[in-house]
Length: 175
Image (cartoon, rainbow, N blue to C red; front, side, top):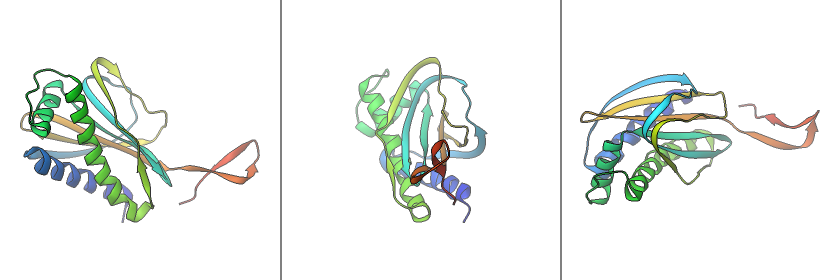
């Protein structure tokens, strides 16, 4: 099976399952695009989680402050009128659940993978950028009128070898 297709299907299924089970909500959309990493200005909440193993990359969730508050209210069953620590924690946990489910789906093809602790950024007119030049798979959803973007970037890892290869002790895995 095509890895790109597997990632897209898993992102759509995982996001739908988590929203349905944990938030009692239904996502619509699931529009897929593939784009090189770009540093577009953001307003709102962005959560990142690293993926590591024989393949490595990042999963990300982006939403508005209002949607982040809705996520918190539904997940923690508490009122959230502005972005605070509880809201950021709820978005981080939602990212962890969605990308964690995708990671589990991918392990049957890619072997064991690990997840980092999520990092959440909140603000206005900020930019995020990946150090790699890999393409990102973007899946856009809506929860009622609120947009939600889930992204993933994944590539083969580089592993050190016992025998150096010229000036660099690293070479890409052939998969």
